[in-house]
Amino acid sequence: MIQFDKVTKVFKDGTEALKDISLTIPAESLVVLIGPSGCGKTTLMKMINRLEVPTSGEVYVDGKAVSSVDAVELRKTIGYVIQRIGLFPHMSIERNASLVPNLKGWTKAKTTERVYELMQMVGLDPQEYLSKYPLELSGGQQQRIGVVRALAGNPAIVLMDEPFSALDPISREQLQMEMKNIQKKLKKTIVFVTHDMDEALKIADTIVIMRNGQIEQIGTPTELIESPINQFVQDFIGIERINRKRSVGKRELQDLIPSFKRSEQSSYLTVEANILVEEAINLLENEGIESLLVKKGIEELGFVNQSTLLRAMLTKEEVS
Image (cartoon, rainbow, N blue to C red; front, side, top):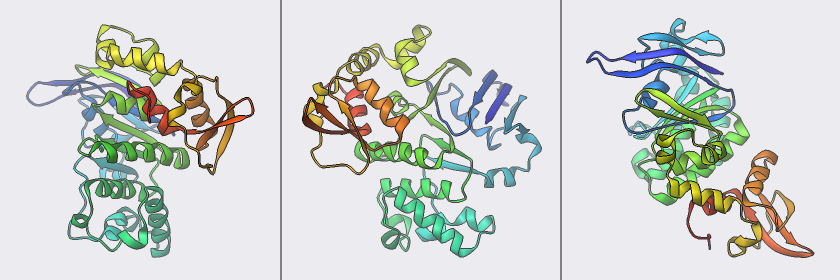
């Protein structure tokens, strides 16, 4: 668990970036910090690994003040993924991915096992990619390696600062879904900064909306869509997005027949065609399964997965 206790940050030029912030981030949750440029979201996140230090107040990790921990030792225990990726170009992918385990003194066998496991999790064949160098990979592949490196030392906490914002839409969507799947399997505490509301609604357990160094509203994606607390939150989410997500979420699965897949999935539950889209999404998340087999009476209409349903929730048209 991460706690911010009355945290304020004033920079040397007098800019008050954070104003008396108190916030609790539960363990094993994916929390998104979002808001306009300059709202303080990145500054707040960087206080967790002491890249920024509060002017007043304190940050606690599992009840221990981070100011009482050596900064270098603290950062070894916290994964960090940034937009610019930060891979070392002169090192192979294997060496880049193994940095933190090596710093922590892991055996070669343990490090190799961990790196192989994570490479497979992000959809990259370790046999093919570990001997390559960063410049031989696409931007999306490099960002996947950034995620592997952040997770390699098995940190309890992972900080992600707009990690997918520079990617093309297809790579970005793939990584968003992989991030959700990784989180289901590894159950880390992830603090994710973004300026993209669609991304926040898609991946977050909880969203923290900020403005001018303060928190405007905290809630699940559904809570924010259903009950924005004020005009700023409503405008920031976007009334069109709110109306669209509300209306699509209330539709029945059978309305999305063109998006159904016909091939059998490895992990699924059977549901009736008249359940709501939002109910189907919650079922997939809570049960940890890959897809739903949709039936109308004795007729099998096909399979839907979380990616299909979320795209339907976030686009104006049905997915085909």
